[in-house]
Amino acid sequence: MSAFRLGDVLEVQSGFAFKTEYFSLGEGIPLIRIRDLENSSTVINYRGKYRDDFIVEAGDYLIGMDGSFHCYRWRGGKALLNQRVCRLRNFKEVVDPEYIHYGIQKKLTEIEDTTSFVTVKHISAKQIQNIELPLLPIAKQRLIVDILSRAEGIVRLRREAEEKAAEFIPALFLDMFGDPATNPKGWPIAPFGDLVENKDGQRKPIKSSDRDNRQGPYPYYGASGIIDTYDDYLFEGEHLLIAEDGANLLSRSTPIAFLATGKYWVNNHAHVVAANGKANLTFLECLLNLRDLKDSITGSAQPKLNQANLNGISILNCPFSLQEKFAGQVEQIRAIQSQQSAATAKAQATFDALLAQVFSNNKGSWKWNR
Image 1: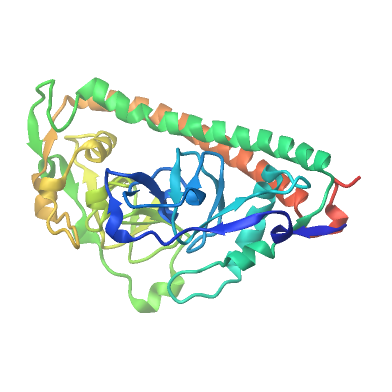
Image 2 (image 1 turned 90 degrees about the vertical axis):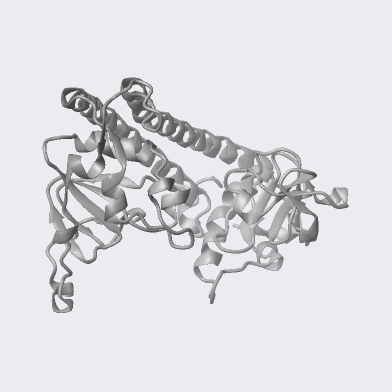
């Protein structure tokens, strides 16, 4: 089967090096940087002069040229194409732009996987121009696009359902208990340390001689949540793990409290607390993830929630029976969330399999040329 080179059917336009002295947080036209591509949302504006040739419109195809290589459809409004971001444009009639968009993803991943780097990986416009894709009649390209867009649409709907499900628990908490910062329902207040049993003293380091002989591939938790390895301290049972340090304490980009069960490793960047019969751990987990803890965090360059400050956090001391009722409802919601996640994973796997089949380099597996 014949193939075509991207540089022969479209133009790869590199972004312009706009002067930082004209960057603004409000005035001017939005400026697209690599970090803006995934969510099609900008932070920085540009208030200097610019050429219309560098204006990006919704629906344009953009690729970040540093870090992780991926082709995005821009979903935001009119903005400027900044340096280290490129745009695919001026497509010839022999190709469907969406066919290119789907086909280029695997090729970009291959380039990323084989690119050496010291700090950040880079891709050039020439490398993108040299990408080759199977050459099919335009009608067959559009058929492929139709099938892949339907599969991608299912994945998108699944992810949207997951996002909606993730909103249920915070909404339920606020409905039952109110805002933990303002306490509009007038619940009694108690120090966090009085409502739990702190287990930080049981974090005993594993001897280096035992590091290769640990039992089981158990999950590992640190200040940023679960990661796919293990280290330091083995715990068993139900414990509430709370980030002790890390920038996430201030940014709250991920939850700082996580309820762990079973067997798991915990590093020394997470506090470990157990129930003492005075509060439900699920209730405390949700409360801490809703509560603004900036007043309890020391440092800014290296934020830290030490044990003394953690113990002193003012907590809603709601009736234990109501906390238990809340925890039961949370368990049901999380069961639904688990089902949603499984459905999303299945939809994503189906889409990925279709993508791999359509754009496989193995001609024997190519089915669209029949």
